[in-house]
Amino acid sequence: MASAHVTTAAPRSRRVIEVACTVTIAAGLLATGCSTNSVGSAADVTLTPPVIEPSPPVPATGRDGLTQLPLSAYGTSDEDDDLLFRTQKALVVRCMKDQGHHSYAGQNMNRIEAKTDEDKEAANPVGAWGYIGRATAEQRGFHVGLKIPTGGTGVSGRTAKDYEACSTEAKKQLPALTNTAGWKLTRTLYGQSLQLAVADRRVIAARKRWSACMTTAGHPAQDPEKLAAGPWKTAKPTVGEIAAATAAESCTRSSDLAAIYFAALTGYQRQLIAADVPVLTAYQKQVRDLTDKATRLLAESPAT
Image (cartoon, rainbow, N blue to C red; front, side, top):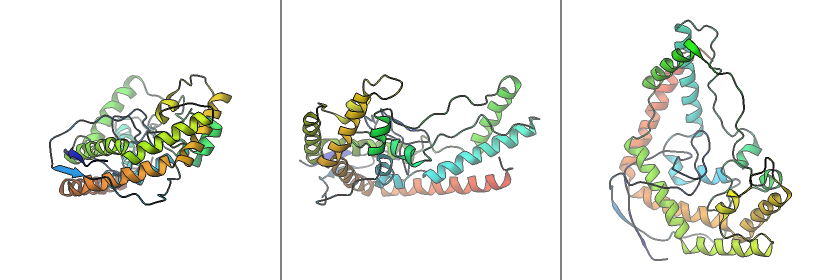
């Protein structure tokens, strides 16, 4: 593939990245089909197709593939997100108790995350890389993503009004890094790396092998994302859906699509990062400062 000429923009985020994508995961993961907007030009960078080793490793899960990418070193990690959530919750609980809601314990504040091995495999399982885990394919078909709990305890009346005020105050004490220069740049670079990886001739070849494999398996498909999107409208996966998902998993392995895709994506991200080290380094410091502040605030707040 010829060298790609990319104009980078302004800054971004860490372990798993939020981009405007087709598939998203609670707590800030991403998927594919992402759209990006340039936020200023940091540098003009000429990128070259990265070297890919003969047998690149295959991520254990789609989530692992995303969280191990170079750009995932910038922004908040899963552990950071957990700390920030617990701190926000503790601040709100303390505020609510100060307002006279002594029985309030943050029962309407819940964080959706992948905890079990099953949920971790099903989180972000299918994208341009074609990844879907065997267990997910056999048990869920394309009914994937995190399971969102139903029901729960809400708040109403004066409690709801005070909750909104306390939530606003908590956000002032621990402001998010959303829309900072680093946050914007990481999103922009991530989107650019996705576009470059999809256009890489080795990824294109792997996707063609995947498609040929799917046709041979009796489930013709040109695109892993479109196949996963359906239509699979039934409440539970059908026998046909399970068969298609299982074939997609097998074809992804035999075509080396996931391995090659993540290897190419990693190589492009490293080049993009190298051109924007100062802004990204500053963003890392912002994250550290934020998590340090969260740790202090949490120590000062009652346990929830």
